[in-house]
Length: 219
Image 1 (spheres, rainbow, N blue to C red):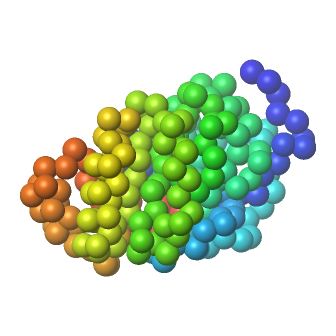
Image 2 (cartoon, rainbow, N blue to C red):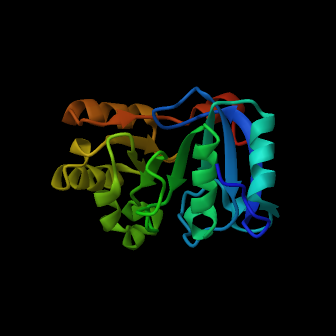
């Protein structure tokens, strides 16, 4: 394992230990490394506090803080983590240290350089997000079976749009596909009924951490 240099710093919004609230790893004790900054402004964003602020930390300091929690799983998230150039070295260093690493990314930035050991969770932005034009469709070619595609759905129109993309681009043949309702906008039961009605090959998810702790930051 290469020793991180003092120049390999990142702007960190927070590092905390919680249960994974989403994805196929839902419920697993996980260390979250939230990077500061994001070039997108999605209408439903629930981490706007990570757009700015935070503190500079070296890779060595980040690894030390992650190790303090004694967990197997690490999730690098944001904001948009790939907006910082040293995100890629961070992901590699975490993998080299033996962690099972996932990356949560908006899908607007290139994922081709992400370490192959990392599970990529890639958003596809819907019309109601306000950022649908930012989708980098070339990212689909860089997804492996271990990765996941996520749609966050605000309403029935978003659902119909996502269903069309799912079918036209045969997404379920690439990797797992997740459909998630925007809290307070789309009733989870409605989304469940639509998925069953249309027999979609997707996994519906709700945000476990919000069921447990509401919108508390750092949980």
